[in-house]
Length: 277
Image 1 (tube, rainbow, N blue to C red):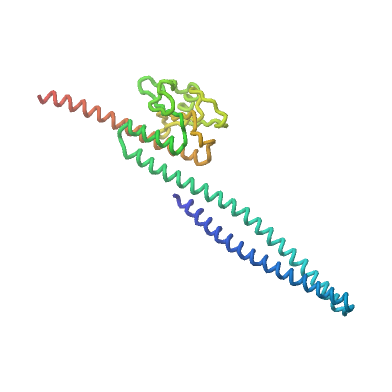
Image 2: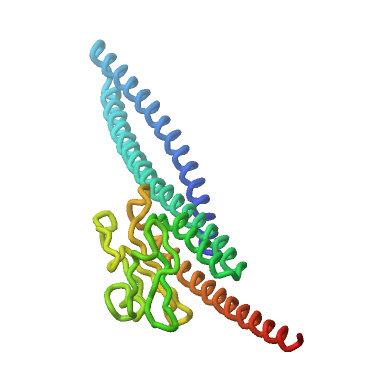
């Protein structure tokens, strides 16, 4: 959790306490107003009753007028307080909604931190792809997707991992061609405007995220279908996509370098063994 998030969360707790205190005082004051209102109304009734029976002095009439004015003033103050309470209740609802959003965001970022730690703690290429797949399923909420990398020999983007669809069904793409190729060429993410209305098209994915090492694109993540409980993308999803793309690209690049070095080491060791026999 960042310092800004901690500050926001602390501020929200303070606002919550202030609201509860103000709401309590407002409720107490409103109760007092109602009691005072009732007392004054009863006093007016007494004066009117005295005036009706015995005529009453002129002072009764004046007192009656003053009490009526006071009741009107109390009614106005009561309405103002109730209006303020309703306003605070609306602000509190906004605060509660924002608090839930921050909790969810912090939870997702914590999960991503754990996942990114796993990514950077392993060097086997296949294991890296497994972790990336788990992240896309559990954090993003995708059901059908693929991880595509650029083949250094052919220059084509091809699927190296997939979920919900066959690797062979994912088309090979040349950078610059079609939606997927355009993302690989420009390095800009692609999202459809209406995920709920999207119809699966393997050449035009719902989401296409470039895997970049600095400015160099080494592949893309393409998503074709979300899990049934995932209806649409929320703001935190776009942050997760950005962070995931960077961490996944670094982990894939590192695991490839490690695999290449291991192959070279094995080859060299084989030559050395042959020479020393």
